[in-house]
Structure formats: structure tokens, C-alpha cells
Image (cartoon, rainbow, N blue to C red; front, top):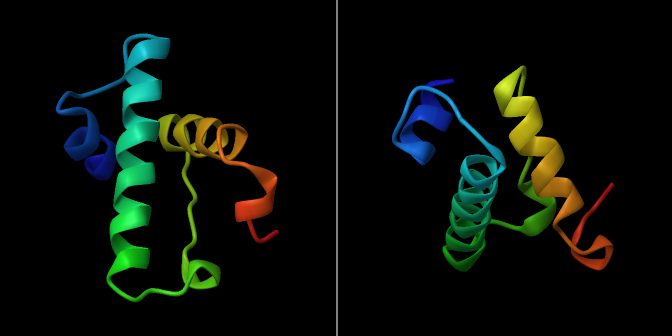
Length: 69
């Protein structure tokens, strides 16, 4: 929850637009980590409750070819 609070700038996502903004920010953080030298296969995303929603949305919006399952 603390990470999502940091990402969204609020206590909880209020609607789909908030979740999509959080997903965009997580995508940006992943891109930043990969640009800094982190191997894509070493990036793990998970979440519980609201973080799970963000994680699920992130996976649904990421092309299959760029995911390692």
C-alpha cells in the first residue's frame, strides 16, 4: 500500500483512471530499472489487495512478447 500511495499520491485508487495512472507509473519505474542495467528477467511485480489490482492491470497492458512467465 505504501508503494501505491507513493505511485498514486493518494491513499487508494478511486476509479479506473487512477489504476491506469498507477500502471503507467509502474511501467515507467520498470523501464527506468532496465535502463539502469537490471535484467528484465530479474524484475518481479506482485501485490495484494489494491496492489494485486495494479499488478493484474499491469500484466494485461504489457505485450506478451516482453513478459517472462
